Length: 420
Image (cartoon, rainbow, N blue to C red; front, side, top):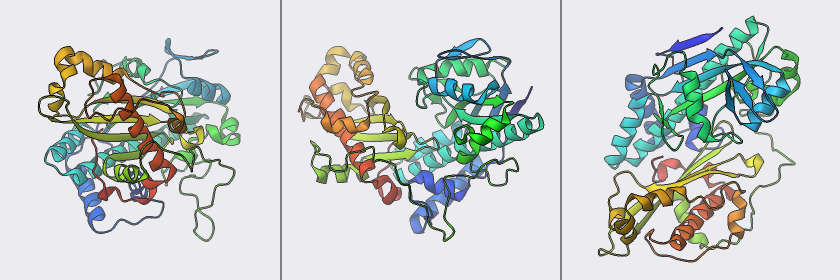
């Protein structure tokens, strides 16, 4: 059985992958300030970062009618179950990777020092490191599987479509089973990991190599950027180009968002918020992470300023950008919310209620333009109508940004980055 424990993996993030995660279009060349920031983030991490990788093959895999069981621990991901079943998988490898806590701490220091550009480039480099660690781990597993006459399937993780992030603690406990507490990683009550630039994943393993070759959905190669791999079975799709160097146009792909949407918010405000208050990252599996920074004032105590952050995870474009996760809470270091009259009455119970509100969760993002909701422009969070109103403006801003592909044409260096 294979087991990998690497506390000093070589990190060589490809420039094209980093540029893609920064939000630039394919083939973009960083220049001037953006180039300086990218080089700084890379150099800082080379000196101070502590990435690590852990992987172990599970002892038993059972594929049930509506779930899977790994070493007798049950997971209810329909997508993962169907992938393993289609490939005739007989086993799985459990993987944990992390860019380390140092990057997260430094990024937060930069944010507190009012250096949002440095914060943003370092945060995104952390995401690139995690993707790179998953990629090189997949390559190592492919080499092992090829020697065993098997094939490795694409990795899948809690929080991906059709796998609730609520099962993240169970997966971490399972990965940790052989060495409890060995990994410097924990799961927060929200299901998110700390350090946040980390990932838990399951790689299926099958002896039916012909199925992987025949069914492209079962091949990890099309989403794997590891260029020197000698076990590649199909080309890397993200960088696909025609003979004249152009990116081929994709036809037959209906737009998932209404191009002529009638928003409740003015287009001028949406355009400004999309560049000043919103940050968007598209991950390798097509899912989208968005963070919106809201600034308002309390309705009492002479209108003290408050700041809340909205975190939204969407499914891929091909799936219609379904809203997978939503959460809202005070920004780190915000104290103004304590002066809201509802907080004075309810205390942290108000913040808990706000965090639980997830309007439109599970529905396509396009539904926001048809959503009838209260109009309550109050700057505070004291009543439910004002909170729904704010969720509407957040989701409309994300809709406007994606519908107009602003995330692909606007330089992130010119935005105000938000912590996630």
